[in-house]
Amino acid sequence: MHRPSPLDRASERLTRGLASNTSRRSLLSRLGLALAAAPAFPLLPIDRKAHAQTPSQPSEEVLDEFMKNAQTEDDTQCNYWRYCAIDGSLCTCCGGTSSQCPPGTQPSLTSWVGTCRNPDDGRSYLIAYRDCCGTSGCGRCGCDNTIEATPAYRPHGNNEIIWCFGTDSMQYHCSTGALVGVAG
Image (cartoon, rainbow, N blue to C red):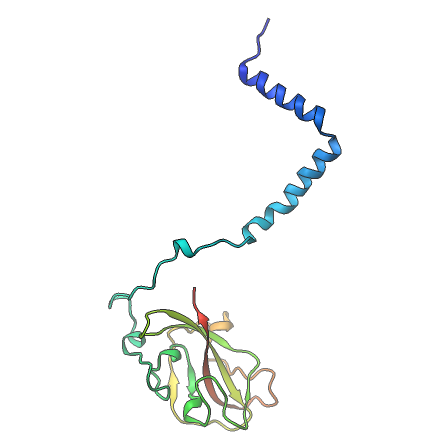
């Protein structure tokens, strides 16, 4: 006669105990709840501060040409740190600011984005570039920084598109670079 192993006896005891204290409906409902809730676990918030690293200065080898020359003082220059992915006339030279359109123009409802490094604090920030539309082109302070530009099949980062969608006129005037927040 075959004698059951200790593992077989333990699993039989566990199974019989579960079967005597749980109905099939209860077991199926708990199993269904677990299966339905399982995909949501990755969405739960996680405290990542303990593992976060402080921003460090990238080595000179990692810095591209724009980052090496970026400055934080004069937003009418193409090497202003927020303009790493801007293309067009700077609104700061056309009666607006680095984040607001000049009077008489409308900001586009859509924008392209870039991630620019501030040389003062060494952190990277998400920048939303928005075209100002409605009057003829300003034509001053033309910049074409393509550090963060992406191909046309990834339009959210393509700075070659006229982004005047949703405005009264598709006539381009100038471009802004508004700070959205810290990247990453």
